[in-house]
Image: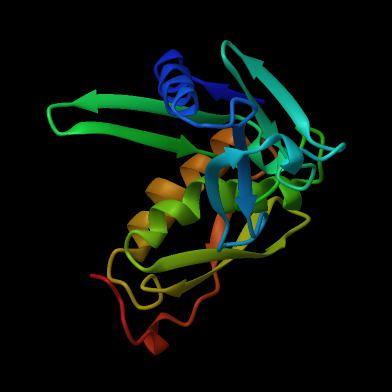
Length: 192
């Protein structure tokens, strides 16, 4: 479920060894899981903060605890620690924090929404945009509605065909293409 690299394990073990309470471990969690505002975090976890429903991941020198609500959103999460001349950087990547991962046999609309939220929208967010699935038609087309910086953007056709359509068709064989139903002439703040 959660992968903690060797360097991150060493970093946590060092931090925890400096605590007065030797029964302190770490907690990995998601605030607002399954929403566009989801944020992942790591904190100290004293023994009295461990809940019966928590999942424990034992490592050398410490354990990582995950609460029941956060667990499905931390599937495929990676915690890493990299050092450079300026010090160290702890990174936590949780591709499923904003949307719960769906199974390969889930309905097509659910799988499309998952890809849009976990892969496409994070990229569009860099430009202030987003895209939503409005419908998956009987003839295999994903009907999409753009918003934010994508609405009215001069590059939306390239994004739609070369980025979104290719990705959706490659990862979801039932998807035969995409159609944009956005009124781009009404866009007020396109990025481009």
